[in-house]
Image (cartoon, one colour):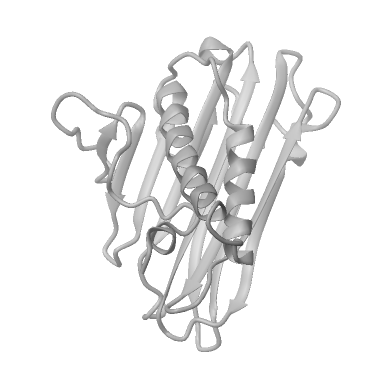
Length: 241
């Protein structure tokens, strides 16, 4: 199993790419701080959950994604990429394009899957991996909204990104992704979508992953920009949830 297989899209396991000084700090949900702005935990079924937020979290995600792109690019210099690898490359580049730059640090959200970003904007990040008798389905959803009556006057723009992947043992990775941006001309409440890989043959043994984030530009945000992301690396699909 090569590195691309282990990392398929955003299966970003345990090695932080940014140094974090000091002892790890546990959080109420059992996560451990592995870098500034980045928390990670391992669930009972082996799923690795990583949350990132603020400027440091965006920088961490950017470095991980750049490493994934460099790895696939190096393969492309030696042979033609498979469709799965080409899809992974496209998904990584799309994710990288939407990550914010030049932002200030921001407070950690109370929860990662849903909460309030920059005081009055509501976001949700939702990732699931479901295995049944005929296949495995990876689902990732991302959304951001204000108060349901359109964006407030101090809203500048927002962007949401979601990707999902499934890889059967001995097979190739299937990846889907989508991103969308909302500006003052659009209703921020409309920026809600999901990506799904339905009924992908599991062969009883497979891995999957999901990655999603939302970024927001508004005068309500510390430093003008808010960011939060969620990564899940599903280590097995051998058992049905």
